[in-house]
Image 1 (cartoon, helix red, strand yellow):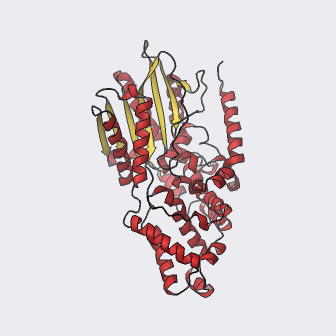
Image 2: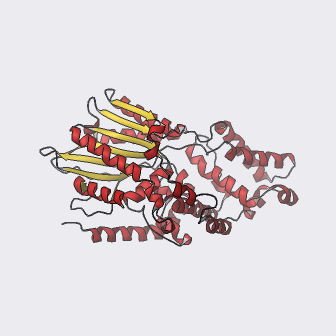
Image 3: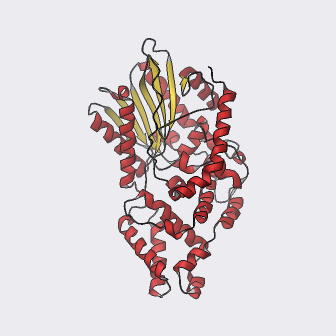
Amino acid sequence: MKRILSFTLSLLMVSAAMSAQTAKDEIFADLDKAGGVYYAYPVSTVEQTATPEGYEPFYISHYGRHGSRYLISDNDYRWVLELLRNAHEAGALTPLGEDVLGRVEKVWVEAEGRGGDLSPLGVRQHRGIAERMFQTYPEVFKGKVDISARSTIVMRCAMSMDAFCERLKELNPELNITREASNRYMNYMNYHSPESNAFNAADGPWQEEYRKFEVSHTHGDRLVSTLFSDSLWVVRNVNPHTLMWGIYWLAVGMQDIETQVSFIDLFEPQELFDLYQCFNYRFYVGDSNYPGSNGMLLDNAKPLLRNVVESADAVIASGKTGATLRFGHDGNLIPFTGLLGLEGCYASVWDPAEFYKHFSTYEISPMAGNVQIVFFRNKKNHDDIIVKFLHNERETSIRLETDIFPYYHWNDVRNYFEQILAR
């Protein structure tokens, strides 16, 4: 029976409502999810729908975020460490504070000098995604196939590309993989318009409302009281708001590195959820379909979508098999998923208190998050091409009718893409 657009949208509305009911519960059940985009990639074990009879996969178009990394700067670790060291010298730490100082010292042994770098887990994530792609669609990677791999010029993205491509080469040494990390491709790999940059600037139109939201959702006094024994020293040296955020970054970032230390226990679940709401807020308003942006943030992904169309056209015209692999950032993946209209990625909501119910950074762009568009052609009629969409390796839908869900007719999808690009 043909799936019509209204039916598909009804399903999406039901899914969104279910998400709204469970998002807080999900975070309370797995506090690592309170890290939002720091959430370590959840390996998918969901079985995919069988390829329709008479079709075979021949091409994969991919965009992936870099894998797990250290906190963006060494200073994100250093300043908390130095504050706790100073408090120790002043005799101002509680027994728990002394314990936390020891934990940060252990983390610093691994993290020093690695701010923003891909972590070993990030390497393993991309190797795993590559292996599952190869195993699920072996026809795409058979023989001396040409693979294009490009990343932004940021090292963690290039290292993610290398990890992914090396695993593919291990599985088939005959693959011809061209790897590039160049300014030449930044105009679509990591595009941000001047208008969107101004919108997200420190004096942007949404920043004051956000500041008030953050203040109302950050309550650091309880945490500070558990770490410091000298209230006068705290008055003179500690900003509870700032320290709570500093320890939050440490807490949610530990899932991405190797040192087996945790800071999650320092927070109450509601405190973590409140901080998550703030972090999630920034990504929703700054990168997704917030109505106040008038679509300019999703438009940042249009050059990438144009490259997707052009790259697919070239492979289809050649009659060959292959893959186009791209590696970038959460600030690229989030608008791309929204522009495509992937399920759960394009909500338009005004009320900040409702953002977390409709937009979830840990689901949309965890570390190593990715979108894969898999192309299949009819073995008897190569003009008959269908595609399906994977978000973090799970089948998903777009805002387009289809009679073969989770598959779509490529001609319909291409027209849908062209309509998006034209608006």
